Image 1: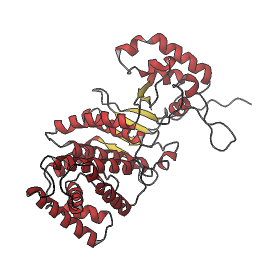
Image 2: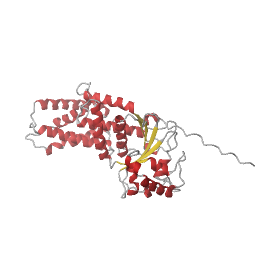
Image 3: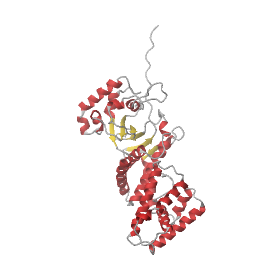
Image 4: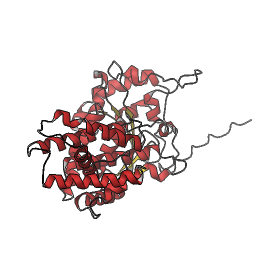
Length: 393
């Protein structure tokens, strides 16, 4: 009986038509974390670089980038894994080729390299990135050189040695597009981002450049609030359900620039009457009407007092107000990061308690009334610099 002729494999599918291999990342999200700050940083990159078109969160990989790197207008895809967990060793070949447990105890799962390379299944050209908090051992240092850089081009020997080491571990593994780990090593970039606070500081500096390029000047606390709204957009995209709302997982450059312009206009030219934003935020926090009305009255008391001060020396007021703003920022950051699991009403109560304790550290001849302290907090809230709910995009 004659042998059947070999059948040819169907051509690869576009990245736009492929369903992700896994959906677990949508569930493993609580407060904002390292990965959300990395995604927010890539969104800032996208606002600064017109060649980067879209940032997808928790789809084919932790983060997926779509970009057009040159004048050919050919779409490229970059698959990014983010490793936030710490362990007491540097990243090594052994670590990235170690097969992870599947959780069922029956068989080992894929290793980091295999999971990354498995994404090479679309028709578009692709590359890879790993973002970690911990540095790498010398055997992986070549990957930390930027793709296309002169240093990377000259490091052919080190790259060849790394490819051999990976082949020894994973010689039989190939991607759906029939590429082996040599291709993965050639197209991989390893980025070291340290931790969420460091990534946030780096992102704030670059976001300031974006705001400045739009012709706006905003205060540092306004910049921080703008940034946390951007992080929230990344978080929302990461937690959206791909099978229900796939488009919500995609952050697009044009949409993001429109969003940025709208938020800046709201900050620089608030159209609402004084106290209106405070009222809306308290209502959003599900606080009862009598609390909302009292908050508005205490804000008015605070504004009257700063015009005709009776309770604070001239030099004390900026210090006290700065302490209140810093206290609220710390609380808000913990809420966004998931370190606080308060409801909005519980968080409002916590803010009052913390603000109430501040004057003990401030020298003043007179006792500062709570109405002044709370009024200051509510005025900060009205200026869009505080809220009693988690960050909203």
